[in-house]
Structure formats: structure tokens, C-alpha cells
Picture 1 (cartoon, helix red, strand yellow):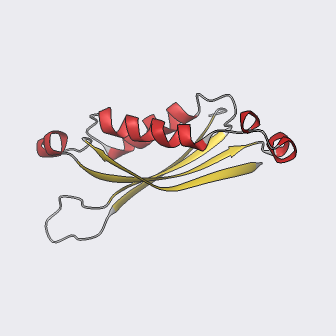
Picture 2 (cartoon, helix red, strand yellow; picture 1 turned 90 degrees about the horizontal axis):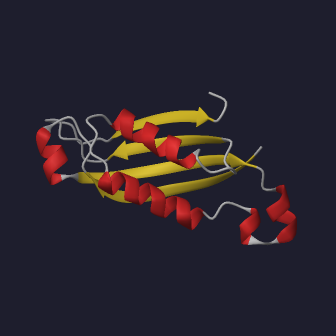
Picture 3 (cartoon, rainbow, N blue to C red; picture 1 turned 60 degrees about the vertical axis):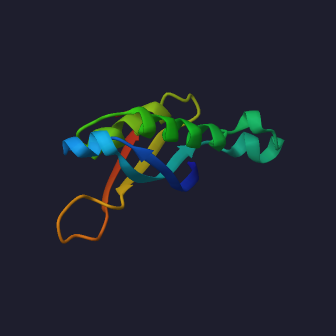
Length: 120
């Protein structure tokens, strides 16, 4: 199976367990691996024969910006479910990072990684 990788999709959203996260919001970063058949597009050189990744990026940004979930696990799952609505995508891996988690004395980032397919 072929794949398209989209990395560094930056968005501002309102998902978080703490009430202030859902009011003030925060930055998120999304990386995707989309598994699909690219054989036809590889021969035709026609965008309609592949997945228009501009649309995927826009869709992910819109979902992150408008969703209010308590858990980043739920947001990552919502992203995967939305992407799998495409007839062309067989499987998706979502890496959702929260670069500035509101945890005292923690300057790292939190990352959730899930893989979903149409068969699961």
C-alpha cells in the first residue's frame, strides 16, 4: 500500500481537560500518514486520481479549531474518523501533539498516536 505523509499541520484549538484550555485554547500540531493506492495517479498525473492533500489539511485545521473535547485522544480519533470518510483512504495514522501542555515544571510536549483503518 502506498502512503502520503503530511507533517506539521499547525492549528489552534480548544480541546483539553482543564476548563481554561477550552476557553483560552492552545496550539496543536498534527502529523498524518494516509495509506491509499497511488498507482493510477502515478500513471495519469491527474489530481482527481489521488487524494488532494490541501483538502485534508484544511479539514483537519477546521476540526481542531471548532472541536471542544476534554481529551486529546478523542480529538485524534475524530481526525482519524473524518479522514477515513474518504473513499480513497484505507488507513490513517494520526500523531497529535500538544506542544505547551499546562503541566507545572514540564516543558515537553504530549503526543498521542493512533492508527485506524476502515476494517477496524
